[in-house]
Image (tube, rainbow, N blue to C red; front, side):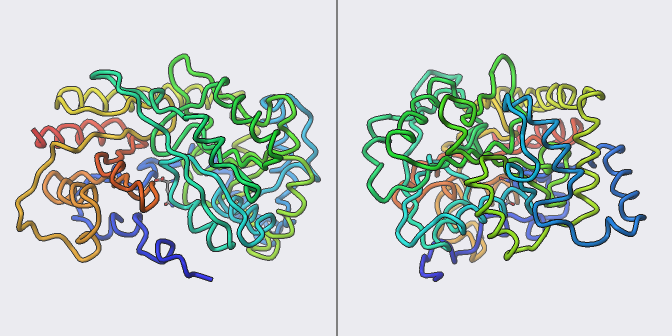
Length: 408
Ligand code: GLN
């Protein structure tokens, strides 16, 4: 089953894991925060640990309290009354939710379209389930010195050509990891039209939905006419409540998608950990009244500014993201001595793997090589970029930016 060599190769997250890097290296690599979840969410977790029931199995659909909180928080965003019994499924992080959809729906040889660069996890999740990934690149348009994530566009003829009678599903990740692109309504309408024409399922990975900046609007493809019935939307408490290690995510979609996926998730994990579901329920119940999401978005906007202004000072090109918490830095100008000692895991990989390692060791700031978000054929496109995460406190980002001036 694991015949795909790519799926078996060491994953990028474990190569650039903080444990392999110098202790004083500032981690802007793997996307997790260096601050705690909000105190009122953490306290709810503590309280849940102190109760008997919340330490035991949940219903495989997720705890009712959390499903109701999801219904109340997201219902208005989907413009519909969500049914907690058949349209919401709590999963062990967004990853497991996506994996369960593939388990439930992919038949051997079914093709799944994903836009490149793509979040690396999609590839093995599809191939482990005997699916075939099909790649449609986002093309960066040259727009002078100040490229933005918006410049990365779909060639719709190319997308149309990628669709075959075997195409089962298309993954639409907005806001996008790693580019930070927020898909426009027009783009999503064109994707939706193709999905309808060819009867495709749509997996809308919207885990960064709370992080959309400036005047950009997060559009849910599930809300476009005719799309609810064929779309499953993926989300996660990890990003919303700075709790990536809690592994609490959820899926929202029609019963025809949620029910088979529930059967899969029940057999994979049975249920998601109970006390943290309870805490996330409290988080969603109170987020609005506390003005939490808007406040957090403003904080992320400030963090984005610190990092990108640092890159401006450095005079290096980067892609200004409209959403998510990642910035792609153009690393073509970074060079290292020919005999630089790279570890085995980096040796023989793309130029970006080396650049990221070199920057982590010499500048003491880690990042993630972007070729990992491309298929083998297109890897060289990603080799020009390193992905820096700005889900860090302001002082840490300022410190990182100072160090990065050493790249001059
Ligand atoms: N989504 C996070 C990132 O892109 C973490 C991914 C992971 O650890 N698998 O950095």
